[in-house]
Amino acid sequence: MVENIPESFEQTAPQLILIVDDESRMRRFIRMNMELEGYQVVEAENGIQALDQIRKHTPELVIMDVMMPEMDGFETLGLLREISTVPVILLTVRSDEEDITRGLNLGADDYVTKPFSPGELTSRVGAVLRRARWPAPPPRTVLKIDDRLSVDFNRHQVIVNGERIDLRPTEYRLLYVLIQNASWVVPHETLLAKVWGYEYRDETHYLRLYINYLRKKIEADPAHPKYILTERGVGYRFVDFKKMQS
Image (cartoon, rainbow, N blue to C red; front, top):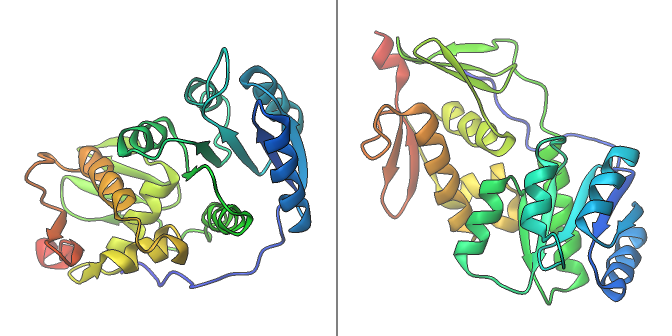
């Protein structure tokens, strides 16, 4: 059994946030609110500058607009993910699920639609940074589910038929919570609060996407899952692997 995940743990506030937006007024607005919260801020007005700032300053978080000339936020994010795992919040005036899915598939950690209030952005920043400060792995770092699947909690990897498969940080957190509660149904709201943060308890599209990501990585047939089971209208349940091992 994986040991309990702490509800909270103390960390110092991050020091540096990078703001990427071609509109100087928007950069000033975000900078003012981030500095009021105690963060230090650097800026970039396009994707090329953003990549350069990340190499120079190694920020704790990037807040980046999607609609930028020449190289938009999606393209910048794709290049960024080749060199860094820094958390990224995308800003956009569009809120359709196709754009959200595209951003998350490219490695974004969250998505905020313009216009937004200072409180909303501050809340999202805090939630993303809390997720980035996930606690150390439990002493038992490798858990064998069955002959096909094992989970290496130290490396945030799954081992499927002897092959190691990397998990994105959010995929790992989601799998961690599900395995912690193996054989029990975990409600949608509980998973969202524990994995993404309390602010996300109504954002069920995040949960659907990441359940699909996990199933594609660990299930032999994602359309007919064996490990991560859906309890319709309620939540998800990880299979009782102790019975599988007996």
